[in-house]
Amino acid sequence: MRLSRYFLPLLKETPAEAQIVSHQLMLRAGLIRQSSAGIYSWLPFGYRVLRKVEQIVREEMDRAGAHEILMPSIQPAELWKESGRYDDYGKEMLRITDRHDRAMLYGPTHEEVVTDIFRRSVRSYKDLPLNLYQIQWKFRDEIRPRFGVMRGREFLMKDNYSFDLDFAGALRSYNAMLLAYLKTFRRMGLTAIPMRADSGAIGGDLSHEFQILAQTGESAVYFDAAFEDIDFLQDELDVEQLKALYAATDEQHDPASCPVPPERLRSGRGIEVGHIFYFGTKYSKPLGATVVGPDGAEIPVEMGSYGIGVSRLVGALIEAFHDEAGICWPEPVAPFRLGLINLRPSDQGCSALVAELEAKLARAGVEVLVDDRDDSPGAKFAAMDLIGLPWQAVVGPRGLKEGVVELKCRRTGAREQLSPDALLQRFAA
Ligand code: ATP
Ligand code: MG
Image (cartoon, rainbow, N blue to C red):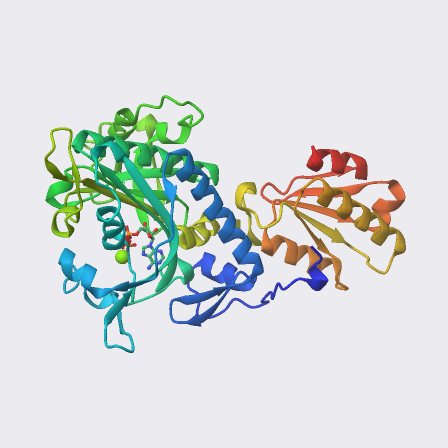
């Protein structure tokens, strides 16, 4: 992709309305634009990241055995009256009326719809366990939308729902999701800490919030260092052992009674990016989602629900990975892997080499963004740092004479000179 023909509207100034660094950088680096309070358009650069985050989430859900569906964003109010939540949900729910005066709503979550699908499609315990997921826009009329996509009104969520015959099955589903979540976040280069959360009376301790670590995170977290070295490639990770590891919020943490020895206690700041919980028959009972059990009796299914804030993750990733100059994308979610700067587009030699590198890298499947604009070297370096591609390669007249290009790692700032062939080998391998 050539920057001269791409749609990447960069801002020089930090927009005054943005209070936190991820929001500032998402606006400055041309990822999003606000449409109305808490509602955003995703521009090409931001949309590429959103899709990469989404794809990692999707792959780990598929690997865990969940099936992808897509439920409607507009839901009938009747379902929510059946579950008893219609009146309770309050003003966060955007209620609408269609031309026939039927009460509808823009889905803030999908327990009712998925339970309705289940009750009309599944009859026997033999069809369990079942786990359905979607990646869909939600609307919650948050009282104070803020921090850009971190707390929007319209936001993209991966939500899934497990159906099991009994508690033992529900626990297995829950544990599988807990592991899948940790793997998902680790694949994005993030360390996620599962924090025990309140799930009301029915859930017992079966609710966890996932906090990813970022210096600018909203809340303090204390945790066992073991979370940093979990080897997710191992297939036989012991979930119960994982759940027993120490993790506490500021209010929960008491140095005097903390069971972790000081040398293994870590602290940091966290951003909530996911939430899982078990809720038993809370929806299956009122909606009549039952299966015929082994002995012929009708049994309401045991359910759990699991959410990941996909659009919030884009902001959270920037909170976790940035410096004074801009964003530092981890490779798995980077919009492009390599930024190729043509220092002097008017120089035929430079342009020929850039075109050759671009074509060969593209053929090898490497995502390259070429800065071929007529701008000063300083402005190009600053823009490249701002947008944060993991690698930058510079082609200029001086290097051309010496037969080298300069490669810079965005995250560490380390630079090296190498031949164009060596560069190709490095990235196309
Ligand atoms: P919060 O306490 O932050 O309002 P929640 O408990 O309402 O979160 P859930 O209903 O569990 O959140 O939703 C699952 C995930 O969706 C959250 O972990 C978060 O990552 C994301 N999410 C929730 N609300 C928003 C929002 N307003 N904007 C962006 N992402 C959100
Ligand atoms: Mg909320």
